[in-house]
Image 1 (tube, rainbow, N blue to C red):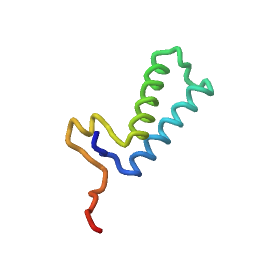
Image 2: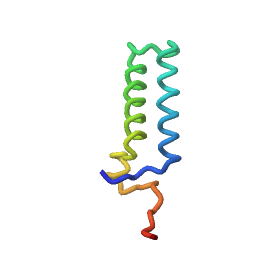
Image 3: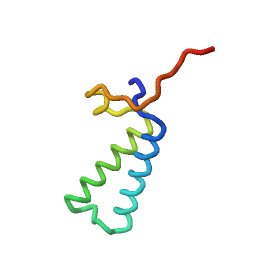
Image 4: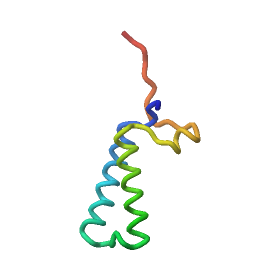
Length: 73
């Protein structure tokens, strides 16, 4: 898997996952509801993609927010 997320993109995804988890764990949205399940899945996806620096949807559409790495010595 080639990295396709910038550090800013990673941070936004991880913060989003934490915010969704906070909403679920504080009981604002019950996890046993359809909305709760959808939010839980979204949080897991955000956390995973942020942790591994790779997004399958970005890969599918050829998008990359990762800055171009130069080969300067």
